[in-house]
Image (cartoon, rainbow, N blue to C red):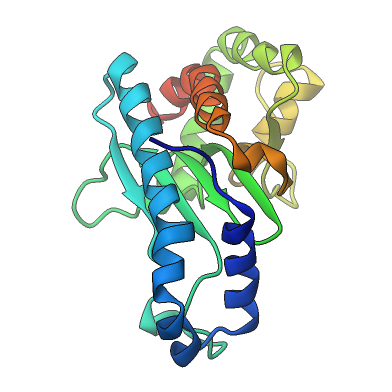
Length: 221
């Protein structure tokens, strides 16, 4: 059962960031497993089981590795000082996971975040997104009205320099989405007491429950 992270978890992440080399990591590998990897695995598994028990979407659960891909080590630092888990649908062979919507939770040395969105939506995905808004703007407006009734998640994502103009009149809120290159609905905050409690599981599950109608909309793209 997930009982929360601890101050030792945060200390380990900062120490790894400052000592990102193989000799230090090998000497502290037991600490990594005990204070960081194990609680993250437990949290991810419990969230996944609770979400999929209610929402049958063919989801899978993934946990990031602490080791960086050898092809991407450009800074001489072979380890990640952060970990995350995701809940998503498996992508077809040869397709990139970055182009599909995923639920995630990430823990970094100085902050944590969770939410739903794309790492990098494909250009065609965003073309489909705008076409779907144009086809039924009322449906999309109704969906995003949900965001006005909460303060957990905010919209983030890069925008096109050359503004995309909708075919139908949209509210200012909807137009903000229309001009995104990629996007996510994210909650992000500084590390603190929220991480040290088993209640974190409930908060993440509740957040994913709120975001599920958005997922059902995005996955059709």
